[in-house]
Image 1 (cartoon, rainbow, N blue to C red):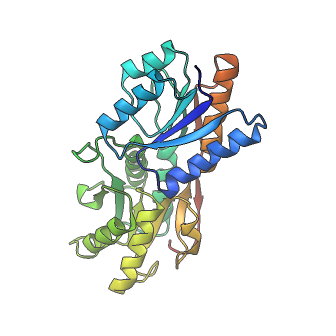
Image 2: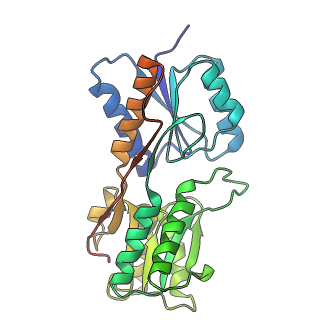
Image 3: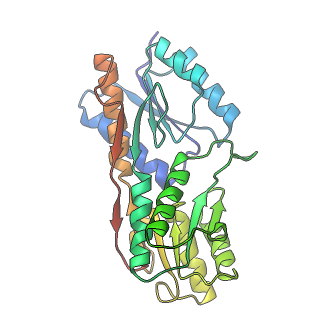
Length: 285
């Protein structure tokens, strides 16, 4: 009555961000050479209700031997139930008491990106973030966004620049269309921005570059742009995107390793594994 399936649970099925992490999990699974686990991907569509019901169903129905979640906040009672039934749960991109976690140092990544722009002479730097507070259609927010804003603010402060709320823009769905929408807002702002740190990810940054071309804005001549993640698209967009690389593939592989250690040993020495990001310098900044 026990499954050999590992569940991978994210907000959506299709996204370069999730797909890179999932690829790392898959690589770790097959690199183990044991081929004893299958891997299934579940999505919650950003709904708190779906998330709670799904995590409970996976556990109670014994559909999975372990679960890997991405960015989710998970209620204490669910964590306790997983521990009681000895089903490992690993959280990627969020530290949750009672779970194993794999994260990236978002504060240092954002700091390095912002400081780099400032050292290039930029003073009016916009920051693009995901939602910082839950809304009706998207009840789970990522802690990575507040951490990246923290790094952005620290870099400004260390360089004698005041933080202004007018420089902060939020997106809902992390897609190219939202990048185009935000670029339109930046272009029409009373603030004459000279740089953008797109903490909401490379996909949004790509949309911003596309809209900038439509508006006749030269990148990086008129406006420098730095993204976050270093997905494959960052290399092929013109101009190539300067971005903060967080090792999503490696994070997924480490998440699987923690699952395997937990299944084999009942425990693991590493509770919270933190990767270091890297600023990848290309043509957009």
